[in-house]
Image (cartoon, rainbow, N blue to C red; front, side, top):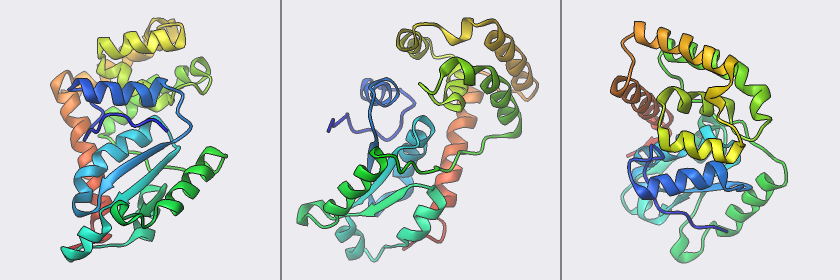
Length: 222
């Protein structure tokens, strides 16, 4: 087990987030357990959704269920699992409740019971751009990185991440002629929609928050 720095996001706006993201992407993890606070799940789902874009092997640990009960917060676990597409295990770590079941789910995921996580739905122009870039990436990546997530990061163009990615893969995906052409066409689509630089990043963040809100609506009752 590797305990990576606590983060609310994997957008790499801090050293902790960068370490967490890079380990999930390039550290060879068999699965990821995302520990969430049951008293403020919607805020924590930001991290869950971003992790699910990197790997499908995710188990959500919904901790502090005892605190949620004290605050009269009811969480529909089955509904959350249905909406997220991954296992959600309620726990109260201080009293060791739910920890055995959590590790049972982790074992199942690492042994091949791979879930089908929900994808974040982005604005139409970004979805079109992602589809363009993703297509030539699939044969290149050979399953080593998630093509959709890789396409998203190539469009974001974070130089630090792209350098680390090239080191991990042994080549820079954006330098492949087919990928480079797809990125150029994708950027034209985004540019027509005014989605460049900070506007692109804002659209990505807003989409993640919107899905988090949708997942919690009705499944979490205050």
